[in-house]
Image (cartoon, rainbow over all chains, first blue to last red):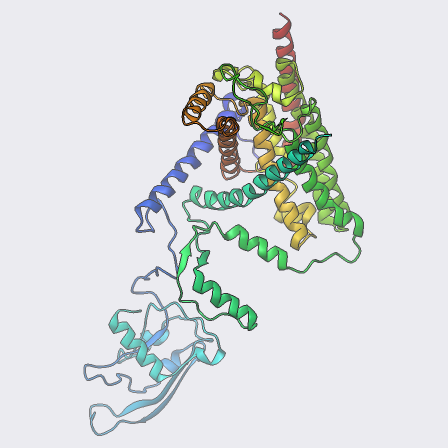
Length: 171
Length: 397
């Protein structure tokens, strides 16, 4: 059922309401110009963020591209326990394990290869939760577009490089 | 026969045509950026103009038929002013498609009719004075070339008001033909809607103008403007305020602008009567829409806001005349210089009205179709008639 709004006579004349509306939009117009002159956008007068030039930093819990963490010696933290691969609902993680070298006697295994198919990943973060070694985390990197399909397959080097970028504060 | 007369008319027509056509990109730009600002956005601002080396790089890439690499050369910000030119280039380069079962002839001539009628109205709009105002009898206004006066009106027609009504009536043919010839249901419905809307609102528009004609006692637009010279209350917006409101509302409807943009509607009838049009033909429709805004603004200024007159403009013209004669300028340059003031005033007034057109568009929501018809026939038409009655009674009292 359509409910007709109750309007007073002055409102039904429409003219005053038009002027009211014009004043509202006019105020926004002037505010936007003020915001542009003031610069430092986005501000409350100019909400546009000029994206490719200025980038938004998501808050820390944002789930972007993964990174493989390193320990204090710069060695990969992952022990190739396959927890993340097991828990992954889309089965986009593929790990191949190998024996750890003699230098790192505290670990028995490490990943020979660690691949994530970003085309299948749904960024649920289960891998991060499942990891017993805090070896895999997510970054705030949201610019995941690529020109070729193969660029969407992240290998171990790329995931470790993501850690370096994270440390540098890039993502 | 004095051939200067013919040449002057042609040059005047070309100058006015060029001025109006070049006003359109600026209006389009202001519409987009204004929309942005009203919504606290930036609007289009990223079309940069390449510097000389960038131009060379782009030229070479066209010659080599390979896309230019990333140009890290000098670029100049244009604040988005180049955007309409980029759009025009895009339209010009697009394939011209005529639908398979469209009626070819009408399909092709429909946009032509629309833009021609939109442009024809400028012929009778007075842009400046036709005779020298009081105190300036010594100066030749309008300026003369070889004894032929260059009046600031392309065609000094003494039935300007009737001419405008007739021409704007013809413009409907373009829209209705476009809707019919496209052989598409959306186009047909859009054309039907536009036709009904334009014809409905032409009646209150014409009746509103009758009030002005009654007051000025003439249908010559130059005289209508001349009668409004003086202080602000001589402008017909004051004695003819009801007529002004009716005329403004009708003008918004005639230009198919919000809040009366019913001929278009993405969710109901796609793009209305120009759904099936592309490339340059669509650009003609687009141009005609914006030219109609310039036309309406000019008409509004001419009929209700005093045209080129402004309180104190006579003094300004006299000061300019005295100053120019004091510096021993030739008489011809003096008369041209003096005539500049009315032209500037007219352009400024039209610019303000066009800005208001944009402002209103981004403020008001659209009417429903039955509300549109109700407003036209049951509100504006009686209002215009009452206005005529009051004006006539006031004049014969």
